[in-house]
Each structure stands twice: as C-alpha cells, then as structure tokens.
Image (tube, rainbow, N blue to C red; front, side):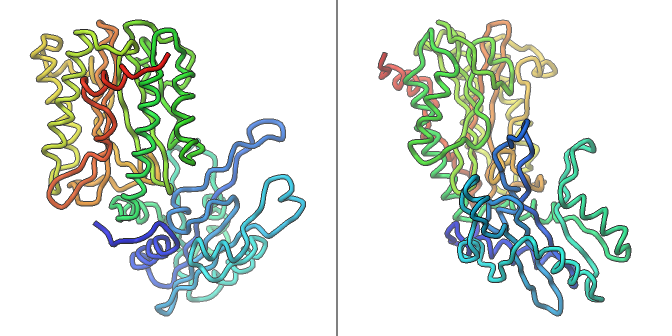
Amino acid sequence: MGSDLKMDKTFHRQNRETLYRNIEKNSVVLLFSGTAPRKTADEYYPFFANRNFVYMTGIQKPDSIFMAVAENGTVHETLFILPKDKMAERWTGSRLTPEQAENASAIADIRSVNDFESVFFKSVQTEKCENIYMDFDKLSKTEPDSRAYELAELLKKLYPYIKLKNLSSLIKSQRTIKKDCEIQAMKTAQKITRQGIIAMMKASRPGLYEYQLKAEFDYALAQNGVLSPAFPSIISSGKNNFFIHYYDYLGLCSDGDMVLNDVGACWDNECNDVSRGWPCNGRFSEKQKLLYTCAYNTSQHMFSIIKPGMPMKSVDETIKKYTFEQLRDIKLCARFEDIGTYMWHGGSHHVGYDVHDWVIYPQLIEPGMVFCVDVGIYCEEWGIGFRLEDNCLVTDDGCINLSEQTPRTIEDIEAIMQKRIF
C-alpha cells in the first residue's frame, strides 16, 4: 500500500523518481503551477496551484515552473520561482526564498522565473532533446489554453522534430494508488470533517437558513486550521435537496425537511468527500426512515464486499441493484429500469489531491485506492432527497470505511441531534 513516508519533500521527490522511470530517455519534463485568473476590474481570484504540480513538487506558489532534463541516464531538476520583490510583496505577501523552495521540494537548483526561457531553450536546442513532456489536461475544446498549451504551439513551429508528449496519464496512474502518508492525511481530514458535520447536526432546527448551517461547518474547519473546504460545500434543505450540486445556501429549513450535506475538509492536500442526511427537526419521519434505511443497508453491504480484484465498474452497478431491491420491497420502484427516477448520479469516484481525483479509472480494484461509496436517493413524490457518502480505503483483503465515525445510523444521528442547544 506504499511505503511509510511523511508528507514532505521525500514524498514529492519519490513521486518524481517514479515518473522518471516511465518517460523516454533524452526528454525534458515541464510542469507549471498556474496563475490566478482575473475576476473583475483589478481583482483576481484566489490562486489555486495545479494539483499535479503540487503532487510532484510540494510548491503552491503562482507562476512557478518545474523542469527536469533526463539524458545519459541522469536527471537534472530545476525549480523556477518568482524572485524576491519588496514592493510586490508589500501588496501580496512574502514570496518563497530558494531555501524554502528546496526544503519543500527536495530540488537543489532553484532559479528565478526570469531565467526560465534561456535555460529551457538551451536544453531544447541540444541534439539530445528528443521529447518534451507537459501536462495537457483540457476537459473541453472551449477551455482557455494553459501555459503548457501555449508553449506547445510555439515548440511545434520552432522544433517540429521534437515530440510533444502528455504527462497526464502517467501522473494519473501514480495518483490512483495512495501512499501511507496520503492515507494518514485523509484520516486527519476525516476527523475535521466529522467535527463540522456534527456541528451542523447540533445546530439544525426549523427556521434556520442553510447559510447558517454552512457557517457552523466553516467554523469547525477554521478551528482546525483548515481555511477553505476541499470543494464548495453542498448544504441544502427540503426542495433544494433535489439540486445535486447546490451552492445558494439561501433556503429556509422547515419542520419535516431533510437536510442534505455533501462536504469535506482537506489536509496536506488530501481531500475527503462525505455526505449525510438528517431530519431538520431531529426526528426521522416514517418515510424518511424507510428511505434512509435503504441507503444505509446498501452502504453497509458495499463495505462488506469491496476488495482487491473486484471490477471497479461493479461498485456503481451493485449500489443501484442493491438499492433497487429495497425500494421494490417498500413498493416504491417496481422495475429496475425505473431506478433512474430515484437514483440520479453515480455511486463512486476516486478521492485524493482532487475531490474527484484525477486518476486512471481502473478495471480492477487494488489495495491503496480510495474512492467514495455514494448512495443517493431522491424521491420527489415524498419530498425526500439525500445521500449517504463515505470514503472507502481498499486494503490487502477488503476495505475500510474512513468516515465511519461520522454519525451515519438513524439512532446515532438522532442521539447527536438531541444534544442540540437552542
């Protein structure tokens, strides 16, 4: 399941060493941290570093560049960072020193980004440069070009004999299996997420706005040093539960509503993704119990059967089939062909450096994978919609529910909610 590593420069160095074993000789590798896009006027969005760049370097500063030159059986690494600038730092905060950059990345050759072009083109112009690897990962043709795409167009014109190759699949393959230090970080994130969910459960009551529940979650994360969640929190009530990705937070929680949340903390760049549903008033109605029990039974069944060698696609298939059998038993869904009326989304996705982790979707489940077991039931006829989502760590002979300690049974949820303070 990976060696015992700390989430430090050793982790990032070993990630790069693994990458080098999978690239061709006489190659240059380039990765870019990215830059914050403009929001409006002279305001920019907060910077968020490219996840593959962070995975390989540990650096989360804008406009940084990583370059590795592999030739003659050796690899020379260079990290380019923004130079110190007192006036710029007065406005936007301190920049990394070369010493800080080396301590975070285990890269000894630290230079200014102003030196990148001369150093890069000197390497490219040698006869030994046959391939240039960059991370090309657009989701659609309409997506704006990143620095990698812009540079690729220039290289095609200047050096048509050099092959441009995509790093994306190589890094995805590495990210599919988590190392021990990643799993430990996920466990820490789970503990913080648990605190946030319990805080929302204890605060929940009719007459509260969704944004007030969100404030409880955000406060719990901040008290643990997590300044922003792993992804935009989904916190809704009543009819708003029927919007799968809901971010308005303006709804009023009414008596008889189910509260739905799909939330997660991030620790050491490792995300988690946990969903819980509970009655706003603290007591499940009979119909809410019926549907929640179906979701809970399916989740329990999945954690009892997931193990290495199981086809990955069967996770989603089994979730739907097992849930259908229960919905049929309570006379809600007569035919499996109609399950889409009540189950609107997939039952699993991998989790890691991204909440929908950028991995190679596996044919077979392997030890060290971490993915969600997500059981969502949406019954518009009854006005009840929620999901029960937990994070599954695959072990050598089975699996572990990483988020099991976050209240998930009807009894545990109601017991927590009876401790509410109004």
